[in-house]
Length: 352
Ligand code: SF4
Image (cartoon, rainbow, N blue to C red; front, side, top):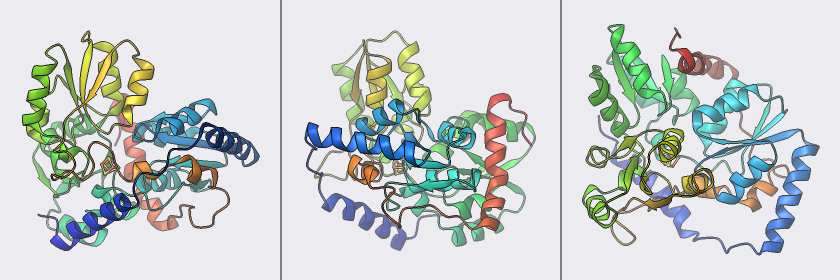
């Protein structure tokens, strides 16, 4: 199964559309303070809390932390939004994270700084084509990554994040189940190699992680011989092979804390550096190399959609009428089944 060329083109155009806007002018310290103060007031007034991903900008992460929100990976974001008593969740991340929050808490308002913030994995796996693909393999458990639309989740038996992908695959393989995996082929390939599970795969990829390059990484390792390499499993196999630790964003932060190395070369979105430097201040972090501007790199270690979460758009989140997440109730109820399985699975492996 390959991504149709018109879809690849659509992904390229969306990325280009965002890149063409250029980097916004940095805010003055005064303007930043003004926006932060306004956002804090609005959060209290609307009984709202910020649920932010590790890949968002440092000022967004700091604000979420200061105001009692959370900064985490997509699994923990889903848990936090589900358990928190706030009436409104402000999801600073990409659209599927907002949708997941809405499915899990249909009675809460879920707002996002912009609904344009999407994900190449989500775009690359349209529900109708995916459903046809599933129909070809009726004997397989359908396991989809969290980075998918509500409609794709509704077609799945299981939803996983990178933090529990291996455990769920092992659990299913032990049960004798065969797996249909979507949409990230690099993560699926990694899971297949690690668990030996019988997997057929949808062909999608993350435009950020796919750009990390093994040859340049080897060169960088020679420059920093004491550095450990930490790699997110959405990266290509050749990059994963060079890793000292492979894992989700949370697992990467844990590895930086646990390993004795003074330096780390990190193959995931640069947004994570804020938390790495905050949580492990005495170590040095270096971004893994991509092809670089002017070559084939679409992102250079920086997700263009995560970057759409800015203080200005966050400050205007209650003023607009085009940024609330809605999910069809019936669709949401179907998507809730594999999402619940995900939430209940990870702590004790006793789901299903
Ligand atoms: S970093 Fe990759 S997987 Fe994450 S939101 Fe961006 S495009 Fe999607």
